[in-house]
Image 1 (cartoon, one colour):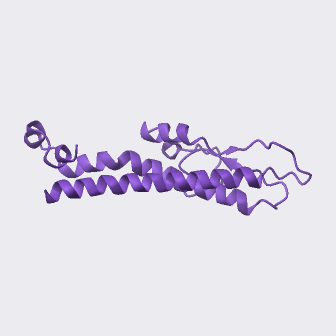
Image 2 (cartoon, helix red, strand yellow):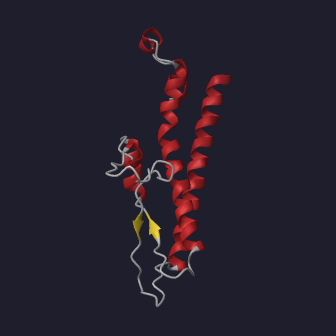
Image 3 (spheres, one colour):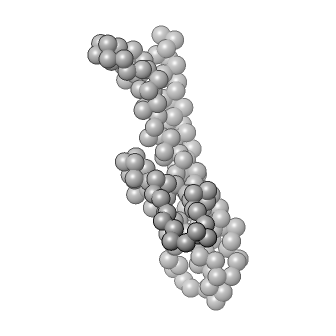
Length: 151
């Protein structure tokens, strides 16, 4: 695969498809997956930080659905918000890469907070491990490409 990416087929050399674009396409999926993992880590860290905040509602998103949407080009960043009043604020700067959902608590609390620390820490740890696995995979791909370049 690495040699094909670097040197391409006869058609690729004749058709003018650049090596850089092929390498970029090879890493595009991992780029989106790692970006979503990093965003999820921020969301989960926010939930943990607000565990004692009254009426705070824990948030999260379905990673597999968000990744499918990002890969197919249907991520929510491409959606434009319609304003019906000139004084409406734009959501461009604060919008994340996917829509956040509210987590349903297993047990309600007196202060209205829906953060379950055990659940949030578990999600945080699992997401961190999967992020590290993604980085290891990308590192392996880079090493394979360097090996192919160096011969």
